[in-house]
Structures are given as C-alpha cells and as structure tokens.
Image 1 (cartoon, rainbow, N blue to C red):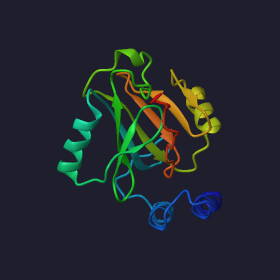
Image 2 (cartoon, rainbow, N blue to C red):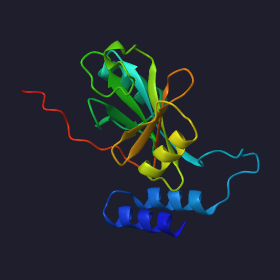
Image 3 (cartoon, rainbow, N blue to C red):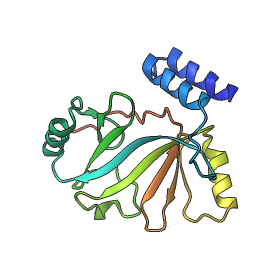
Amino acid sequence: MRESFDHLLRQYEDGKLTRRQVLGAITALAVPASGGAQPGRFRARALNHVNIGVTDVARSEAFYRTLLGVPARRYIVGDAYALDFPDGGLISLCPTQGGNCSLTANADAAVPGQIDHFGVGIENFDAERVASELEAAGVEGVRLAGSTSVLVPDPDGVIVQLSSPTERFEGTPPNRGC
C-alpha cells in the first residue's frame, strides 16, 4: 500500500492529479471496501471511463452536457473526447466514422451508441503483473496497452480496460491538416 501512496503523491507533485483527486484516491486506498464485496482477482476502485461510439461528437456533447451538467469536452487519446465528471471518471465520445479510439478487434465496424469499452481502476496496478496473472489463470484475449492498461474481453466481447484508479488517458490532438 505504501507504493500506492507514494505513486499518488508523485502524480500530485508532477501536476498530473488535482488535490481532490489525490485525496479521493488516498481515501479509496485507506478505507476498506463495503462488507458486501466479493473476492475477486483484482480489487476495483473506480470506473474510470465509458467509451461510446457516436456519429456526431458535437451533438452527443450537447446532449450529455445538457443532461448531466458536465463541462465542455476535452481531447484525449486517439480521436476521442472526454466529458469529465467533477469527482473523477469520464464519458469518452468516440467518432464511429474515421475515429481511431475504438479498442474492439474491428475498429472499422464501430456501431453508433455501442459501448466500445469501459475502464476500471484497480488497486496496485502494474500492467505486466496484471496481464501475467490473467494469462496464468487462463483468461483469453489479454492485451497490454503500453504500461498504462491491460485490455481483456468479457464473455460477450466487450473490452474491459484495467488501469490505475488515477490514470488520466491524456493524448496529443490529432493533426487535422487545416
């Protein structure tokens, strides 16, 4: 647990986490899970994001901003845009036409309104260790996504993206060739 606290503090000192985010993450690490929790291979701490295929990013942004009162979108990885929740987590809007933010095996077959994948932050995340444990347990389709995520399909093919509870998934905006 000490490594988790140290990692959080380093991210805060590097400006990667806000004070609110680091306090929330420390609380999540320090407070035991509710009594109804089931034992699992890994302990989930946060739903980081849900990636939804959309036909019109601006239209979807307007809908979610009006419905949920979230701030304007910001660019994240691939061609995705985030609608951030104040206490952490986000909705990722991924264009179905010409987008490159899908994690499914056939990104060209993206379906509008489909949840492409969702991200879960787990305790003591280490990509190599998590992937190795899943493979050793016989889980099929495990993929590393750099050092920040491990991708694993559920029984119906929905991708579960495992990462640190504090992962931010920042990216560089694509060159749109003005």
